[in-house]
Image 1 (cartoon, helix red, strand yellow):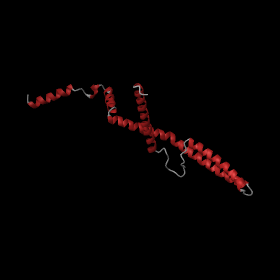
Image 2 (cartoon, one colour):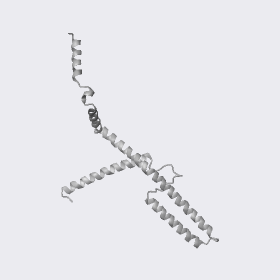
Image 3 (tube, helix red, strand yellow):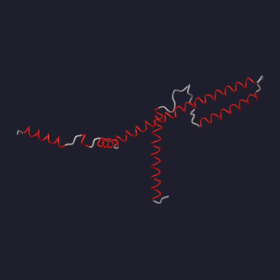
Length: 171
């Protein structure tokens, strides 16, 4: 037997000794490899990125229609106020400053109360007709999602630190 034949036989025996992918456990082996990747630094970074991106789409999906609805509602309130002021102005045959000012003050006060309520409910002062930019763009939603993730992490760390300080008897 030549040396080349011996090397071939040796390599052939090594190949036979190594199990094939199918012999390594099939699906369980693939699952173990996937879990090992996901819990590596790169995998965890990818999971955080994907989690925050999914959160951005969810925030955008739920919040964008509400923001647009609030802007339309405030526009309607403003148009109603202007219409009411004009109607009351037409009612007066002669425009007396005291009468008109009293009526206008009441109407403007009602508008202010409605506007304050809309701001408390999330209106940010932007109008739909004049602005193509809304708060819940994809980038704004993604930043909000990252803010929520980091805020939760900080709160968890603070609670853990409080528990350590209490255990040490410092408080």
